[in-house]
Length: 420
Image (cartoon, rainbow, N blue to C red):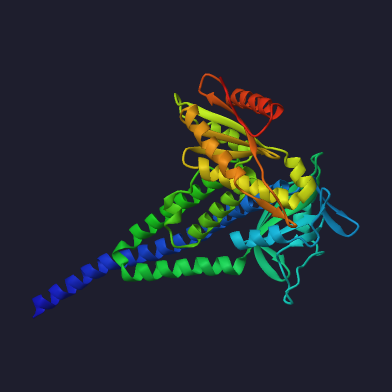
C-alpha cells in the first residue's frame, strides 16, 4: 500500500511538474498574446484608417475638380456645392464601416458622425491637438482615443492641401473605440478558452496566432501601400480573407475601397466602358507576337441627335452603342469610350475577324429605332480599322485608325474603312 501510495504520489507530482509549468507558460503566453493582439490591432487600425483617410481625398478629387472651400455658408469643391451632398460620405461609411469627415479650417463641414438626435455634427470644431498637428504643422495625426461628440474614436487625420501646398482642411476616418475593444476582447476570450481546453498546446497556439496576425497585418499593409500607389491589379492575400475576425473584415473593406476607386478611375461613368487611361493600360498588357485589330468608331451626326432630341436621348444612344459594342467584342478584346461619341475597339486576331464583327455591329445599330416625342430616328457609325502588332506603338495604331475614320467621315459616313 505504501509503495502504491508512493507511486500515485509520484505520478501526481509528475503531472503537476509537467502541467503547472505549462499552465504558467500558457498564462504568460496568453497575456503576451493579448498584448500583442491589442498592439497589432492598434497598428492595423492605424494603417487601415490612414488608407481610408487618404482614399477619401482621392474619391472627392476624382468626383469633383478644384479645391475645398467654404464660401457664403456653403461647402464647395471647386465650383460644385457639397453642402447637402452626402452621397460620397454615406457610401464610404457603408462600404468601409468607418466614420468620415471633411473639415475646412477648424470646422467639420461634412461628416457621417451624428448626435443623439440623429443630426450630423457639422460646424463643430476639431480638438486642439489635431489643429496644432495637422493645420499648423501640416502633419498627419493618429489617436487611439480621440473624443468626438462624447464618444472615443480611433481617428486618423490627413491634411488637405491647396494648389500652393497650404493646408486648408482635413480628411478624417475613424472607428469607435468601444467597437474595436469589443472585437479585441472577443478574440482574447476565445484564446483564453482555447488555452484552457487544449492547455498542452497553449504555447504553440499562441505563438502561431501571433505570427499569423503579424503576417495578416503585413499583407493588409502591403495591399494598402499598393492601393495608395494606384495598383488596382493586386489581390489581397488569402491568408487575410480566410480569417474569421476583424482582420478579414478590414481586408474586405480594403477590397471594396480598391474596387470603388478602380471603377471611378478606370470606367466611363455613363457607359461603364473603359476610359482612355484604362484603355492604354489594357493595351500595355498585349501578348508579344500576337496581332490585333484596332478600330476607331464615331457615331454619325451625333450632334444632330443632341440638338434635336436633347442630351438625355443622346446619352441613351451612347449607352445603347456601348452595350452593342461590348456585347459583340467581349470575348476577344476590349472596348473603350475614347471621348464624346468616339469609341475604340481592340480585338486579338486577324483584321478580317474584326471587320466581320464591325459589319454585324453596323447592321445591328442601323436596325435599332429610337423614339422621342412621337418621332423615330436611327443611327449609324463610321469606323477606321487597322492591324496592330509589336512593330509599332499603340498610339501610332490609334492615329492610323483615326485617320481612316476621318477619311470615312469625309466620304459619306456609315462605312467601315480598312487599311489597305
